[in-house]
Length: 182
Length: 323
Image (tube, rainbow over all chains, first blue to last red; front, side, top):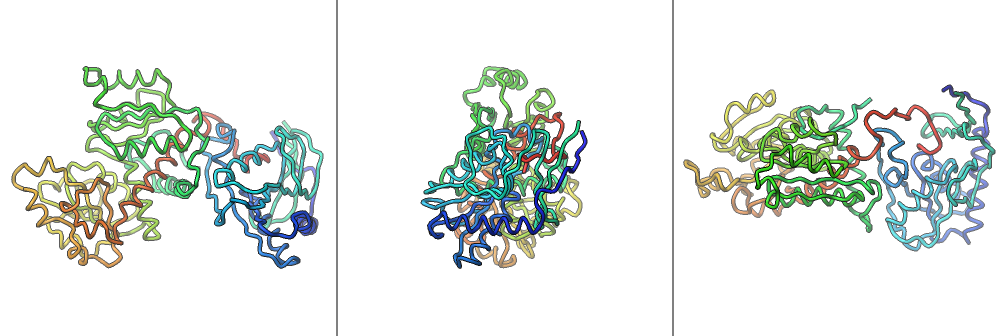
């Protein structure tokens, strides 16, 4: 099994412009930012949610609380993740009850991660609303999950991987389309 | 890469990396105890056999709660109602349990080595909840987590263990764990309970029969339960024990003011520990209990959750689902 970089989907500037645009969309479609909170799904959803909050602060001058969610304990595929599925902390220091939540993740694919994220959030309380924001929607849903805010939609095949690289985690900034060749 | 945990039988065989990994993995489960809904589906459909061949309330409840909060079911075997009393051997009892196909076995037994004996003979992860006077690994782990949280690090502390060390599996597990992290350990109690042979457990172990000497400079003080059944044997009676070895508020002042006091429980107030100390700010017994749940959840999660030991590790492939 070889891994081959096929092409770049988003450059650093394109990522930034996309996030700015999406941040505006979120505020527009949230009636201002009252009760709004972002929940970044570990790992790459976390820096994305923080950047969105900073963007909103910049143009709307509102502080949107940001929480971090680790979905490892809520996965439906624990036995296939590997012999030692490491769990990290969920860190949400505000109440989830009656909040207008936006889950933030890098790539939307089968939808299972988001299903797990919603389970995790419901363990913490009863949100008023949950919507989803992703940088890339790559199709191939296996569950009825949809994103309200999408950076970019990409057609992909089953063997391909969309790899989002962010400065905070990967030390570089770009989105790549990768193929796995047997 | 960290070697996958298959059983949790003792601290002696664990590396510093493995212990640190377990403590790190306990942190999300500490936080989980504060969720309004303390129920995960992570181990849903899994069964944990909780086989206590020795009476226990606290440890047994802690393990069954840990399993339930992870979503697993438990099979509860207790000594009083056990077929062991009817003459069945340990291995037959365990094989019977195995035939009901549990996904993990938590066991406590009055014989040292019982957990390892079972682990070698059946094909299911085994968690030692205390075997004879040998080890009680989850107690040492939760104690370590408590020390690390309260004192910001685990390395290099002066640790005093006070009481009946000879008969204590808690003491042995703690000695193994803390010495791996560079602790300077002092054992203190009546001479017949701290025989010289204990010095071979870890390098640099100190023994003293004088509590004042043991408390001087102690950063962490672990007070052991006085097994009152032994206090009627000459030459030490309960009254004498209290006079010479009770951790009183006054004696605690001989130690640094930020010394941490721990006790594996159950405490006998007024015997090995002064109630004022037990209820004081330096005493972390309630945190120990909460940390016990977190550590046991983390261990059950890692031993029973995840792929089978011989499955290929897909971590090298980045897929969009694995983040």
